[in-house]
Length: 425
Image 1 (cartoon, one colour):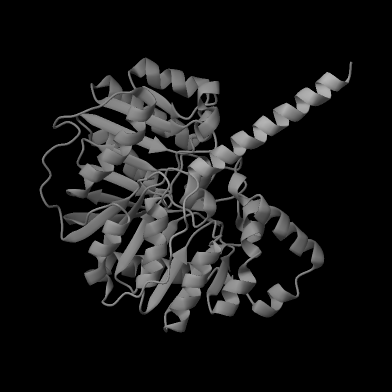
Image 2: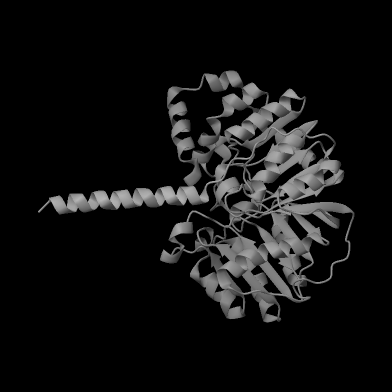
């Protein structure tokens, strides 16, 4: 009587194992080889970088940095000025002051006849709450969720939409790392929030906005089946400035995603300085080797991240610390900031090229999530981001190799355990 259940359990375990192997095989891609030698400065290499990351350099754009809680003022301003369309895509929307402001602005736009489309990640958007969802839909907003929890999404539940994007009338866009929660009010967070978050987004105008509209359309069409066209969403765009830009967001099958290629290839192209600001910095071995190679050819590499007492995810922070020794021995300079959750996803190369977007420097962003990163070729933008790096260093301390090597045993065990779980965090 007991043999059949044991036999059935064995068959079920075998089938599950085969299915997991098939899923791993289908989703697996070769890590990019980062041994390429690149001659020339970033201005001459940007076309190569854009092409490698499945994009095209688009000239004639204007860029404005939007920092910390000023982002929400910028979003409200754009939504308030919209006449035809508002497209908003984000990973996290949580009930609170910020969410109420955004809901009010979107509902007002919809009531005056603007077509409002809101796309939130199925996991991060669950915190929106029924009241806000009903209010948006009652006002006429179209609300969709990326990979909601359901049986038909069972095979893609680990794939999350981590993009952060707002486009109004097809001609102005905000791209960066901001989420819609009260923690992103920075120094002005309510008492209900424990940890302030600081962030960087960019407001862009010019022909690059067509590319960003296409990025929004990708996931919107995937979830709703709706395609949109015409001047309300893809208007003729004249040059708005003199900045050349490109976007990385594609995830080709069996090949490294574009955001991964973008960040890794840029490391190989640096000749003088690499500066990274990222909340979750867990480079894979090939990226660590590329950083080390950059240092050996004379590149200064500095990385700024939140300290463990200033992060919203201590498990990820501990996972990152596992490889601090290898990075430090390679000559990479690591700094931990105590100001709060330094959430911006920024990298500058040689003071002339910058990456700004939604992508963390870890396995989940580079291999699994849907992300969006802008490559910006402009000395002025790079100078502003490097100046922000220097300001935040005042609230940071360098990581010492000697201190890391003498950390207690329990901390080492925590780091190894968290590192083994990093892809599911």
